[in-house]
Length: 177
Image 1 (cartoon, helix red, strand yellow):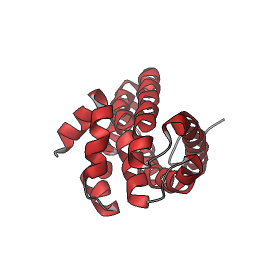
Image 2: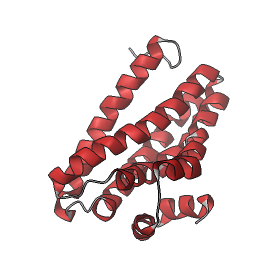
Image 3: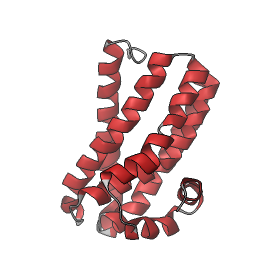
């Protein structure tokens, strides 16, 4: 499947797209090279244009790449606690493809600070797509999918803030606080 079709399906028909994603053979390299590396550039370019900051754009891109992988590690470790199965590639698919709306919504950074609410709305939708995909990709028990999603979101926010603080301390992101 082409990247444009995958993006469209994840944005407008995620429930139907997850079984297709689950059935596709994949590797860490294929998920990154065919999807994450490209889509993570969208918000970075938005930051570059909207905030006119190369360091902030680079930090945004690096955070997206790292977060996708780290969240996949967390998803894989925690899935069995929510009735799911271990398996890193499935966890990476869930992490990477559920971020689609957040990646695409990152184009709103072109508007600078004003685009923030749009970015947040896209990110919330990404959390919803994660919720839909957890039972399919990680075999998470459907009655535990909400709790699983909330735990992953909270951990993701904490990791994101930590990465932002670290990158801010070396001048690659705006300082927090």
